[in-house]
Image: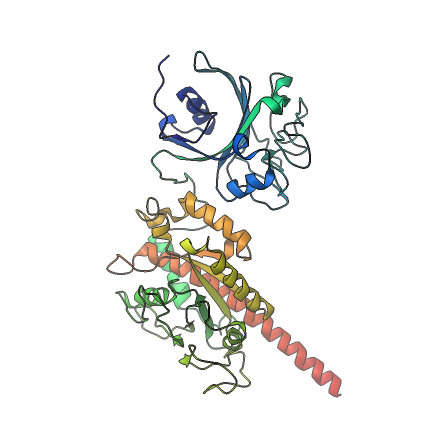
Length: 480
């Protein structure tokens, strides 16, 4: 029987070795067989039946196929979302279970079957002490939980998937003769572009991008009922995160041309040494914008600590304050009693995509976010350098930002590790790099992120004002 070479499509698998196996799996996934790429992340033959090894290898890796072989029988499940070590049930309407037989002599698949999620809930069970587990009460249990691997086999009464029995016979229980692999699902050309956007409600249309741009640059705190005339947004991040590039890009959108207003570039240290305030003007009308951004020094190992960040958040420090030196109440221009107008109303942590896997970087980010949280200052993440992180999808077309499987996996990982308030608080942005001026697509991303920062600041100012009014009322009541 003729078979094609699949060595470039299937990497590291001892279970998927023939093109007919790739064909049936591709059929389950509804993708062309030549486009499917499978990379082994975990193998019981190598790592044993250890949940910790599974999670170390498979968490935050996107879509996966769990494939089990027991003698001539193959079965398993597909998860379209990442496995994690959180203790939770997860609904995945794209998940399914499958089985097929394989004639090793004829190199052909027999008796295949696919069983979709029934659309209820609890499709996937995520737990640090379990391997890949599908279905409430476990339509497909693999290993973990202190139980014998493959010991739970449901022969009927499925709870989450449309299957009466996943197995042809009891031999599927025989872990001693079974091998399990978890394979990452990709595409053979290396491009992981999702058919549908993973963010709803976002539009790249020129008229919609213009509406968001106008909304951001014409924002007026007074019209929003706030007690401050100007909104303060603070940018924080590590050395080379792209904070100053973001400011220059925003100014470029205002000017309709490339702006080099904030110093930025490659180097071994932070180019920003001062706490610097940047104001902007509205595109076309050139009227002053009623929000301003504060650029801070990129953090390093020995740079300013949490206490000094507190001075910035509380509004104690003046514009152009030197952050490279020691900061105290004796610092020139230090405001002993700053007003609400002086305070930071929203802190934006700028994180380049390639830093999300840097444990030291993310630990500092989490520390700074927690410090702001203690002051009830809202914190968002601007995810920078997205085009270089996924050059095949986003680099070729910025409109594919929310179709990037790689970026989605990164955002999912950051939801867990950065301690932010979910995906809505992680906002991809792109700064000007190889463009000769701001584009509609670039402006749409940047202005959408700014819009969310203004909304967060608005909530903070409103809440702060309400607390202040309650305190004043309480003091007046006590004095009577």
